[in-house]
Image 1 (spheres, one colour):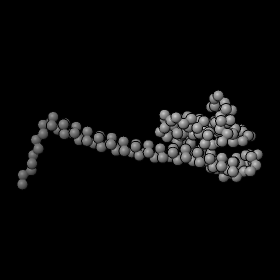
Image 2 (image 1 turned 120 degrees about the vertical axis):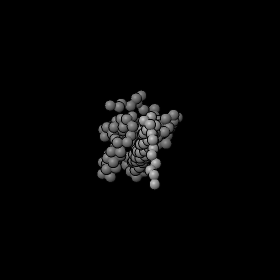
Image 3 (image 1 turned 90 degrees about the vertical axis):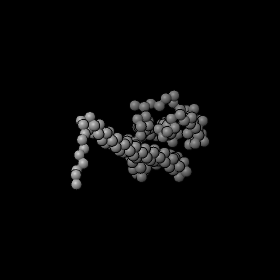
Image 4 (image 1 turned 180 degrees about the vertical axis):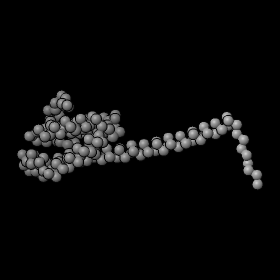
Length: 174
């Protein structure tokens, strides 16, 4: 049995090797894109979960404040509750890792403000919260949303017009 002899000239060999290199690089590039897209999806899922946890924390807190506590002066006791504090620490970690810069800045400002407030839920910190919610909506793909702070506030409080009238002209963010 005779062996087939392949007679390649140098140009044909280079073309063959170049084709193999392009094929290999194309495979590696496609593999990298697939892994990158999977990572982006995982991060997006975690970001949505962090935002969902923050919004749930706020509304659960608000429900407890509004319906469970007959004495509205009990606000500080509600804030000092260990379960609420632990839950907030988890949310802080998620927000620190997954939220965008603007939301994280608002979140930090809200935390500073809410630590210093002695007043009710309708304090300055509520303005941070509604701004965070609007920014979360934008970050989740609604960049051109027409929902504003007044719309969000109307979902939170029946007295939203009064509260929005007392809103400061800007929110101080460090």
